[in-house]
Length: 299
Image 1 (tube, one colour):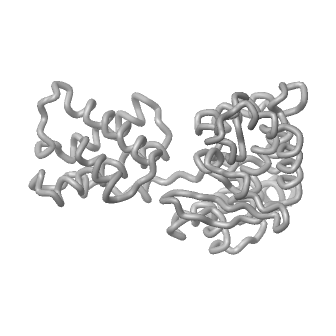
Image 2 (cartoon, helix red, strand yellow):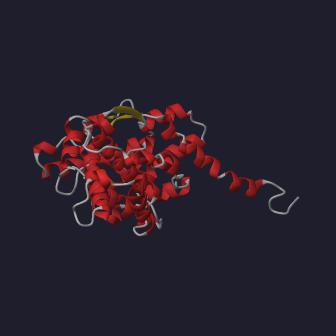
């Protein structure tokens, strides 16, 4: 496994976060199919891979998105072994492609989103201003948790009301942001961030969002802030990607062109973005039941 991770880092140039995910997923997989530590990769079968994926769903109750990521990791790993003649055949090639496992993501309504971003108040402690600005920006730009921590002060262009986002594979995209997000970021930059920056080291002084000690926010901290805000708003099952899902879905429902949404999200493949059209379709039955005269017995 170590040789594969070196290849992924040096040759493929994958990000630190992706490498960490690959390492965790492979450790889970190898620990599951190779209980005594003696199983050769060449003896791993399709059945063993399928059994591992079933256990992720049944025993560990992982959501479909996490299982898709596990499967993608396994497929890349065995493709590497086969290409380097470490194994005679690739058992993962027989497993269904991850696209068949996709699930329509849960999104927040406009009212729920309003409650979430407005949850941090002065009563929540002196970092509430940072949390409010961060939540507003995450929803305004459809940010991933990892992208939030990587933002620099200069990535925010107040004159153009836009944000330069560095996404997966270090690809950059420019996302326009609305007035609320811009106003809260300005307030945070003026009233709180200078104090946080003084507490940190010069190495970290250019990051946009800082911790109480002046250090950049890690992805785990972003998760914690979102979870805390959701609890204050009385919302369940909310995580950082919920804001990204809601950003995209609200744009599609509002009539935005799918190619534009793809650019804003930083998706390399339009097929990844198309899942948000399914979210819109999933509400058709609800709308029909609510407004059609023959659906509620009025006709």
